[in-house]
Amino acid sequence: MTSLLGDVDLPFKPLPPRVLEEYSGMLREALGFKRAIDEEGRVVDESLLPKLTNRELAEIYEYMVRARVLDGWLLKLQRMGKVALHAPNRGQEATAVGTAKPMKPHDWLFPSYRELGAYIVRGMSEEEILDRAMNTIDDPLKGSDFAIYGNRKYNIVPAPVPVGNQIPLATGAAIAAKILGHDTVVVAMFGDGASSRGDFHTGLNFAGVFKAPVVYVLQNNQWAISVPTKRQTAAPSFAVKALAYGVPGIRVDGNDVLAVYSIVSRAIERARRREGPTLVEAVTYRLGAHTTADDPSRYRREEEVKIAERYEPLRRYRKFLESQGVLTEKEALQLEEEWDSRVEEIVRKVLQKPGLPKDVFFENVYERPPWVLEEEKKEFEESLKIAEELGIELEE
Ligand SMILES: Cc1ncc(C[n+]2csc(CCOP(=O)(O)OP(=O)(O)O)c2C)c(N)n1
Ligand SMILES: [Mg+2]
Image 1: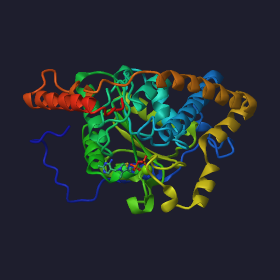
Image 2: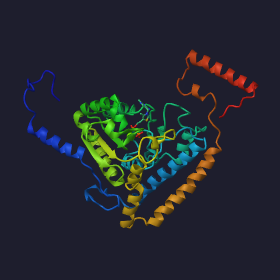
Image 3: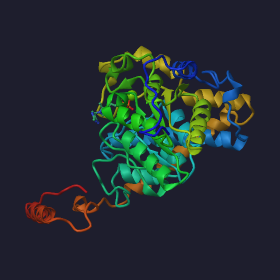
Image 4: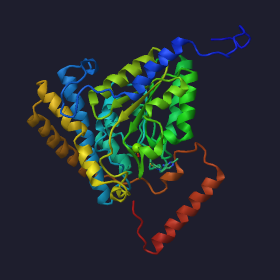
């Protein structure tokens, strides 16, 4: 580190050639497109095939299947009025699974709201996810309206509702881990839209300066609700933004689970060696609506979605697994059916659970609630009594 009172070395000269060389290498990665297999599951870059056993390769497929099946059930449950809102994951399973798989249990995930696959890989069960989505008595976040999914048991920080808030928090957690001498790595996930928040720039700048052990995975799913990427940025890629902060940025095929796994695991290893942060741009596509409250036919062509379906991550990985003799197409599809009936059973069980107590939102914030809250709670209880006297039934 240069001492503030060190040698006099004024900067009125071009930067040394080694900086230009280093940056042209970084630029190639930030504007490139890393993929291990193509849309037909054919190997295109052996160097990106992770060293995994057949069993592990099949397990990765199973995680993606579980994310897809659960996503389908959450959609159905929202339509049944049992889940308030759901952000569809379809098409983005490879990024979520490929990112979470190389993490260690003691690492921390700062996710967004479209990463069911990552929660599942980290150990969160379908039941725990459904408890949260349906706010049952077992909801780990006790009905909080300000967080989406999260679970302390698996080192998953609750996803904030304000887009991108998790970015500087993840940077801070990583800097803290470094100061404390822990070998923890922090992984933050967010969308292309989040890169327009100041939080993205603050988070990356601090991470670059303090060499924070953090990996940012930006899911470029082409849309931020109705805003297409060309309206989000004039830059040719999102990965290139990292370079301005002295952070490497790598553009990867986010629908290729093997490439995501390889690139993210290298970035995690780099962070674990305390060599600094990385931004991975995972190029993917949101095949569904933004949320269950959105109608994408108002702003994007059906044709585009049809084309994007060809790049969908499960089919191509299935083809790869078949060509490698890991899993036949039949076995793979059977797995999907098995999980569908398993999750159906879990859904039935969760539907039977009682809801959270009506006054739950007065709990879990303060150890000793302030007087205002006590007063509000009293008023709330009185209104419940009045409702009861009037015979008005309040839903759980
Ligand atoms: C600070 C903030 N502004 C606006 C919103 C409303 N909003 C919710 S999701 C979203 C789009 C985010 O897009 P992106 O980051 O690309 O993630 P994606 O939904 O595509 O996964 C917006 C604008 C919000 N939640 N927070
Ligand atoms: Mg997006």
